[in-house]
Image (cartoon, rainbow, N blue to C red; front, top):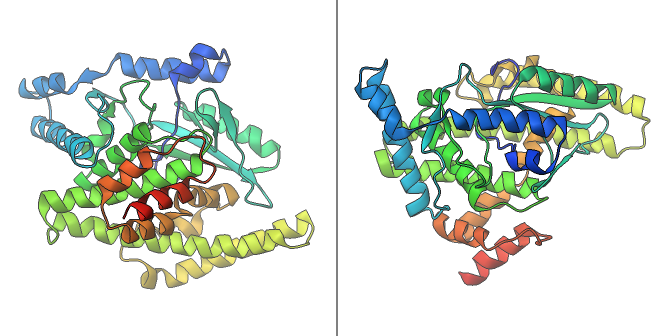
Length: 361
């Protein structure tokens, strides 16, 4: 299901499906998702047991033992060296028969980047809604499309329950590279450490930056800066930055259109033309923009505002977080410690984070 339906999106996208919601809200959605999650948690096995099964002759025993070792080392690095919250997250394992955890629905107005939001108990307003069954996500998409919204469905491979439960590992993660596994776990552990209610954009941008930078540091310390393990994700990140930069150009062009005085019908027609031209340019310039073939399919995607808004959600402020990191001394543990002092009452969390890091320097 990943691939054609869910390409090129953050691998560690966070979606909060708190079972607490189903305890205080009797809605069908929260009950259904909550009980599914409880079922996963109920059959999760400790990593020690997973190791024992591998030692007893389970298939791919060496791979499983190596996976357990990697997880333990990344957890130790994240909590002891980066200062992320101590927890029992990622100490248990769930076997799944697919390569993603949940299907997530996002939506936006068709003639603007006005983001559709859902409200949930405890976590407040969220710009996405997750479903463990893809069929349920498709039903939600159809309902929103009937309201005239642009909709996008993507797969996520992890989410954080923000410390309410012990977030498990899933079987498909065994195939992840060290860098991707570190990025995913650090991203989600950051959510369990720093989470500002009703500040989804800040939460996701911060976790995206900390996950990426934390994984880079982890690989460098583990293998060295000249190692193939370090160079491979460096090239991948370069392609990712190039893709984000390209989408920013398309987003800027559409934002200018949406600010204009044209009618809705005219805007929609021009929007389609702008996206088509952008996809044509992308295909023509691909070999000069990218080192790998990972982004080839963009010219075939049914790109809409919901898809583009995901990159506004996760990456709009990426330069801000990187620049602040550089200005404040490239000290990720200190950066995280400063973020931990923020709370949900902050109206400008970026400004508050800047003040803490630069005034203390």
